[in-house]
Amino acid sequence: MVQTIQAKNVTLEELQTLFGLQFVRDEDFFREWQDDLPEISDFQKQQLNQIKAGYFNLLEHPPLLEKTISLSIVSPLLFTGEFYLQPFYIKPEKSVEISEEDEGVIVKGSLDTLVLKDQLWLMVIESKRVSFSIEAGLAQILAYLLGNPNPEKPSYGMIATGGSFMFVKLVNGESPRYGTSDLFGISNRTNNLHDVLRILKRLISISN
Image (cartoon, rainbow, N blue to C red; front, side, top):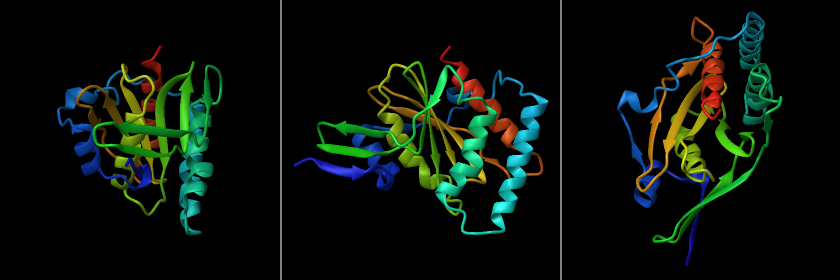
């Protein structure tokens, strides 16, 4: 009998056991979020500053839930990065399934946001409740990245809680490996959204 696990409920331990997933601590494994980052315009910086101001306004009117985060923070971030224009398009709530035949297990769920270019899976963006930690979404986004239909290329994702952002890289193979970036927070003294947008642009440019 095939066992089904909802991606939202899967744990890192289960992914490690079922798919041989390994965490890579070597900083050279995931340099893309640090090296050769593109610049952003002054206008884009102004837009990101407005998103940050809006975030603090939202905090005064809790609860700050997933859909609110998506509409008020993630969507404006993607708009500012021009990810709604050609050659990109946004395909929300796409179902993804991955399976492990030997164990008879299917892990499935739906994406919050999927950014595609020329039918190429580029990154998964998970908007979580603001009260959740980044770690709460890590296993879920890795489950989605394991379902990348182009496993010969690295997969990239971003987890957003509204106030915090973290990037993930997965390299598929017989033993899938993943690495993570530092944590970027809106509440920091400088506007980390500037860094987040630059990293997004860098990760997408890799496929060119």
